Image 1: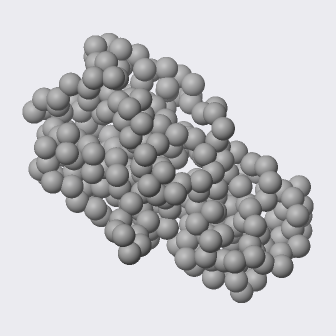
Image 2: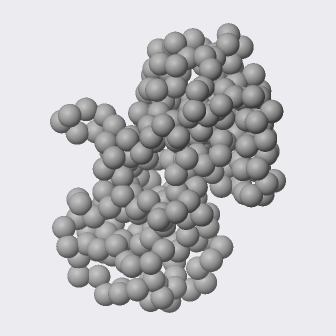
Length: 269
């Protein structure tokens, strides 16, 4: 299977070593062999796990579907020569659970150490700033105002933001929302004082909530990577080379632009 997540730095170094040992050039990815195709799409089609409301996953409008996961999944399916199937879930945690269970074959998500215990990741393909969204009329002016008694901080149920902030916030209360649209309703009704996630999602939420604002600064970074179920060793080298290839050739950037993704970190840290 793909290399385990011992530490973020060591994990990325190990993935790079795997690519080098496979002898695959990122600028000229070779065609997959039958073993890689079978490992990455064992059902004969590539099942891509997405959730609605995030430009890193899936957005839907009158012009059709888009999103980094959606576009890259479609690209990988084309290179494997298999059909592309979207499997939609209500939130990112459900996508991760589906990966763990082998119910989907591919997604793009935050490659945290906790997730890497159950999901295999490539090296990161982009980095996103984490921030806070304040509703119209909200009194919180800066991140320093948040961790205080009585402040309600919204997060998506099962998200990496929930896991990280649960260990960092000492006085504020975490409130979980089942979906991004549900979080918007909580902001509208005063059920939460701020919502925390990556700025790509916050930007989409802010568009749907006129008068809201994303606070300056960031409380962390998400390192977005391609994730697949564990136990698919025969596809390891091809998947790592695919991640490098789509990044080098600008396919990741084009997918991000097509989805209107905002909140990219100035550099991948």
